[in-house]
Length: 273
Image (cartoon, rainbow, N blue to C red; front, side, top):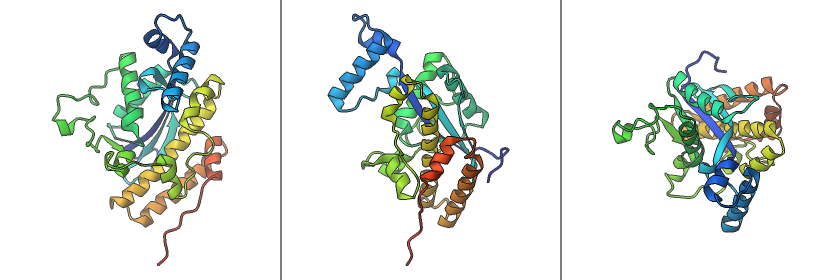
């Protein structure tokens, strides 16, 4: 297992968000004198009627949970943490996210659909709270060297972009399917559409457990894509998986999320000729 002093080459992260009800009331219903809760409920009903889903756009939410895994240059898991635990304050989460990225030498972000949601959430949060991130918004650099350039994988590896060939195909089943293909838990009773109601019910710890598990799924999918790219042999990948399994076992007693993840751990075997 990688040690705590190892170089951080990648930051795998996942963001869970909740509505900014006050903002929704002011922007979408300025003449209706709605409370934040009423405005949020109204907007969710509208979305459900229009799209069949009540997931709010990233422009109307704030981060309530951000889980981040540190990965070394040899693709070993170093650590996995949730930002600003147990307070989970959006401004502190946002500040810690960008400060951490800078502190570790600006490692590559790794996400699943992070280009379409997670990073825009964190970018807009930096804007909201007035945090400068010039190394990320390096707009004066050449186009292909800008951190936010869609094809700059040295700054951000979006695994959905990789698998879908940057949107040329549709990854039906998403991260859940890709995790299940390689024997990892995927979704086990919770998905992102449930986070708002969980938050309203005071289930912040459960949200963070879910976020941790999404990051673990993303890590194992990331490993398998390194096999696809020839960066790891299958044998090396399986070594990293076994090391991560041990890492989870060592922490499962103190972290219910890890115990839950291990309970749903599947078996993957390479095909036999």
